[in-house]
Every structure is written in structure tokens, then in C-alpha cells.
Image (cartoon, rainbow, N blue to C red):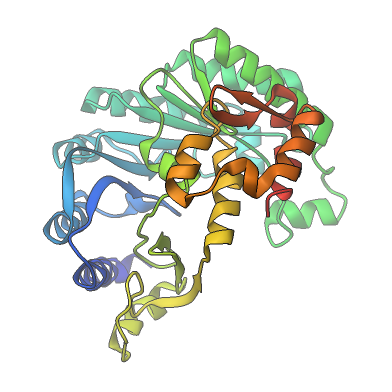
Length: 358
């Protein structure tokens, strides 16, 4: 759909202006280009979006500006231009250092492409680099996974994200699994891979600050921390989601329909726009539940009882006394100072813990 990219960029900028006009001038601390492959846009198109954000909102000094990319689509000139216009964080979807696994995942790049992409990013001036990896693939051995992670550590990224594979039925891999051509991933083996990775990354000086994320000191992803702290954020573009003023919103996902929706009549209500297709008002009870569910993903920070009371005017124990008592008794939660967080055992069954709060 390259032919509609210029029109799409114009629509994204229009949405930013519309939402920005609906409320006071909002402070922006992070800008994140993600979802799909935003690196398909030219540097000038990305710069146009950043300029629009700066014109509409109050962009704070030292703002973190991230771009998600795929290896094999990056060139030195492109990365130099990104750095020059203000991008200071690059996330590269490496996924695996095994080319057979990359084919299985339907990726168009090779591991050699990933090495070149990291090298190009460093030469362009990027000092904050994340790599995404996937573990728990069908037929993947623990040795395969160990080799991938060790090769990634050899590239010395500041941040590493590890995601367990989820097989979706409407994907090529899902169809292969359904037809018996591939085995389902082994959840016990995936857990072993996760635990080994945590130990290895700790040895190499990475802090496990969120269930799926590790960073060198000072390189936590500031943008994603807003999600996990259940703070407000605005989403722009097709399929984008946002959460502000106790309202969760989602945009229409089809690009051409997204562009066309700017022609419809629209009753302004922040943070909605003409492209909003779903919205949900969040009551205080739900916000407290989600603050617990999201905050407990932060393995070191957890949920501060002081911040909870400051935000909601209630003691965390008064709201969730039964849940906290049960989960601490089971050894899945623990108190660290004034913060409630997952134990080492609780990290492995995090979803079971979160379910108690929602």
C-alpha cells in the first residue's frame, strides 16, 4: 500500500491536530512509532509527524523518540537521517539468530541482515538500541535458544525484549500446527528458556525490570513504562489505541477507511477523533484494578502503596486485602519496602496473579 503512504501521513497529522485542539497543551515525554513497520515511511514523512506533534503539544527536552524496525529494511543513510531529525532509540525485530527459525516465523530477513542493521545503527550514532527475540518455537531446542541469546549479547544492545511465541490460528504457522505439520510449542520447555535467559542476562548486567524486558542501567524504555504504570498516552494512526481522561479509545484499523473517516461529522470529545471506532469510559474501580494488573508486571518496581494512595485516595490493602493476603500466603507476591511485587515464583505464573485483580 505504498501508494497511500503520503495521504496516510497527512491523515495522521490531521488526527494529531484535532486531538490536540480538544484540550489544554499536553506535555509529551515520549514518542513511539510502532505497530507493523513504521520504517516504511521516509525520514521526511516521519519528521513531518514529529513536527506536527511539536506544534500541537509541549514536547519536553530530552524526549525519548523510538522507532520499531525490521532488519533487512535498514540502510546507513536512512538511519543517519533518522538520528539527525531527533530519533534516539531504535528497536530491531531480530526474533532469532537461526535462519531456519526466521523462515518458520515468516520473516524476510536473515540473521546476517540483523548484524548489519545493528552495525548501521551504531555508526549512525544510536546509543540506545533494543532487540526483540522470540522463544518457545516449535521444535526449538534449549541449545538453539541459548545460541540465539548469546549471539544477541555479542551485539551489546542496551535493551532486550523476550517474547514467548503465541500460535495464532489464522497465521501460516497456526495452519501448519492445526494440520499436524508442526508440533505445538512445549510450555514447560519455554519456561526453562525464560528462566535460563533471566539468569544469563543478569550475569551480563541487564536488569529484569518488566516481565518481558531487560535493560542495562538507565536504559529502561520510558514509553512502555507509561503503559505499565497505567498512565495516560495518546495513540494516532490506523489501529492505534490510547488512554486519557478515564477513556480508552481505539482507531479504525483499515488504512483506507482510516483516511476516509476524516470526512465524517464528528462531535469533539478528548481524546477521541473522527477515526475513533471504539471507546470505553473507565471508572475508578476499573482503573485501580488495571493499575494493579499492569504495575505488577514491573518486576522490581511493582506497585507502590504510597503512589496508589496518592492517586486514588485509598489504601491498597483496603481495596485488595483478600487478594494480597491470598497471593502473599501462596508465595506469589511480596512486599519490598512500600511496593508490592511478584516473587521469583510469581513471575512464572504472572497471568494467574493478575487475574485475581480483574
